[in-house]
Amino acid sequence: MFTQLRARPQTPAPAGPDPSAAATDGFWSRTLDQPGLLLKRLVLAVGALYFTMVALTNAINFAVTVGHFHWTFLNSGNAAYITSITKVYGWPGWTTSTVVLLAALAEGFGAFLFLRAVLRYRGGATGMRAVWQALTWNIVVWLGFIGGTEFFAAYTAEGPFRELLIVALLMPVIIAVVPDRLVRAGDGQ
Image 1 (cartoon, rainbow, N blue to C red):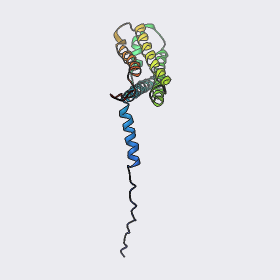
Image 2 (image 1 turned 60 degrees about the vertical axis):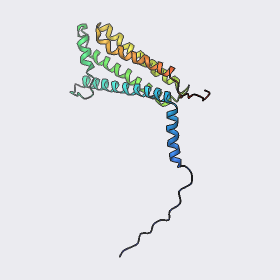
Image 3 (image 1 turned 30 degrees about the vertical axis):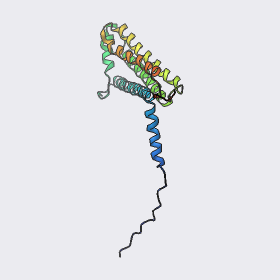
Image 4 (image 1 turned 90 degrees about the vertical axis):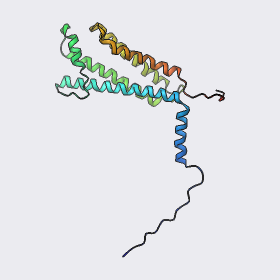
């Protein structure tokens, strides 16, 4: 009735370091030896995440406005804000929806550019064209929002866009100035 379970013969572990541990150690070693590269890729990833979030909230706001839904989660509410400012011009209602859609498309394109930069940038010159395209688009978008807000509102509403522009201008400085690799004394580099 009872059967004996036989233990499988065990093969001895190979001598030397575990190859999977070496691969992991190599990854962390390379990562920690290049803190500048890690910082630069983090800056690009934050740009991708931020543009993705604002594009998503504006796309939802556009869908809510056009579809006459009552959705509030992740809804930027920008259409109502834009309408409150531009109502003095007597423009048709579709112009507000168009502005929100254009903003969502510009931000979505920025998210794409930043994500592409994160995936392509490996330090040095590798992927640098994608990085500069994303950073340039970032500056252009926030300058556009500042100009549009100043043109139509002519008061302090462009304040947050100025702060975002300052961040956008700081990002290329980090990319250009921070070295990729950690230079230790005595390395001869």
